[in-house]
Length: 91
Image (spheres, rainbow, N blue to C red):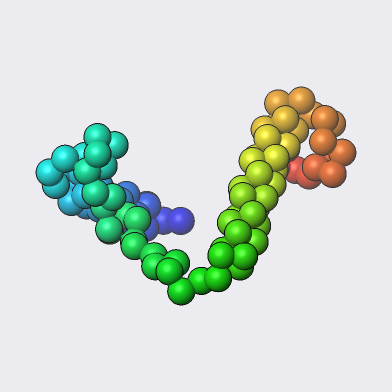
């Protein structure tokens, strides 16, 4: 990514943070969630069983992502510790 692209990304994040953090009571102290960062989603029309299945899938995907990141960290620090990543030049 070119330096100008990185600057645009960081600038956009800075503006979003500035706008959401400068409003009233902070969301970590009981205020409303910032809608720019956390858009409201209405789940009232979703069946309870379907919602439970989707929540379980999201939780499992998050767990798998954490395992993957830890695998990359382990291989980067201890070569050969993750057989599937052995021999890849980035590690």
